[in-house]
Image (cartoon, rainbow, N blue to C red; front, top):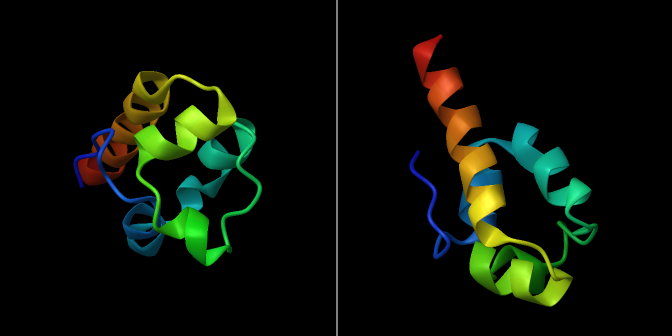
Length: 69
């Protein structure tokens, strides 16, 4: 899976819920909320005052490493 700032959070979590800690560490503790699951990374980061590029980088590194295994 390739992540961009426009990727919807629910799609990411449905693909692999193991990435939940990446969202939790940015302050997004409402992962089960339907509203948050429909937000893009850019939207969520804007609400939480975090850098979407950093989160995208972490998520892509995670999925790339997982694909190598």
